[in-house]
Image 1 (cartoon, chains in turn blue, cyan):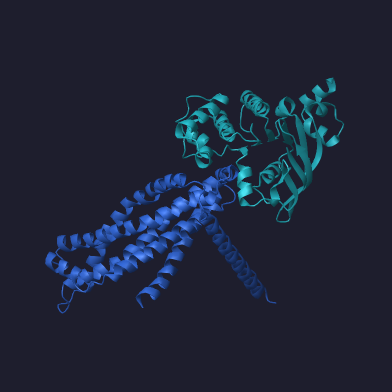
Image 2 (cartoon, one colour):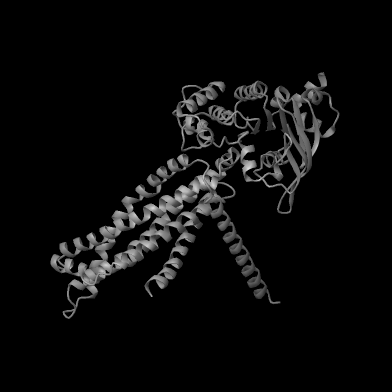
Length: 262
Length: 250
């Protein structure tokens, strides 16, 4: 057999084996994570802590990005629709749809995959290499449940709030840019926001958000929980967590769009 | 009492433990000694169930670890305390919360009862008035004491310590050794300690198991260690000139 074919066969086997093993281990971890908690009160305390760490701490970056991307989307749309035959309020319609359908649920989730995903993976990875996860296990605590379950629940509950805020601020940023830059008049922008509005788009965006939050929390936890080695591996796995979460979000985005909009 | 029968453990193609059998008695400090890489930590972690063993059995007072279901294993773990080599204190929790963690999780104690228990355990390891500090704010020796306090908070029947003296100066190491021995005798605990500190071996070793290349090469008391002619253990224990001189004078 030619060497190139042998190498291809070796790498495809390795990729398949690793992929199937990772998927199996991920499913087993999910099984451990969603076991009945040992003590609801302690899990609730952990949940409140995670709301602060993963949710409230992300408010600032989501707000800043949303306002400025909303502004840029408006300006770019206005630039591209600069035609006397197209009414000005179309700029607001395009901005609204871009923000609600794609920017807030998907792009903000990708940003959160970077911020929150790396935080989760590095925290759990550090706990693994410093034997804190072993310590929990020796005590009789289910480490996956105690450490991962509150992260998943807090992200799944808090992400829709973040994304709703992002939608609001994105459109507000667009409004500000349109009015301050003299691109569209306030009346035209408000008219555009109310024209041909489909309420299901909000539901679609929030459904996506919940799925993305689950993917970010569980995939990042998986990479952090199974770190082997030391500080270098913690960093490597944190990067893998961000990359894998981002790829999973992009794929899930396509599947959900097919299912929900067609 | 913990019985270990013909314990084997491999990682990939590397066989780390090659059929170790021993008995660790209650109220005694059972020391596992050996060179770095001999398999001491794997042996200890296999005993507590952190590593899944390939073959053999571990029996805790008649209860076989391998035959336990999840609930039985959880019940057994609540009878265990463990001091890890790097202490493994939860760095986001303060000292008091570290010590009361297992109590909060598993006991019906009120907050004040848990606090009393934490204070008792911390006093027992001679570490008072540090309750609200984070682990990172304490010295290595103090962190080790917190780890011991946490390990004894649930009144364990079995106490496991992985290199409790690593990274400590000789005088602090002696304090930790004495503390572990006192606690073992006071509460009649079955204590298993991994160490390569020869001072610990001589001072607190009621029962010593020497592991060499994954096999038990020698077993006995610290008194027997002074007089044994077993070449493997003599080479290990008396590898320094100082110990050779001491042995020559015996």
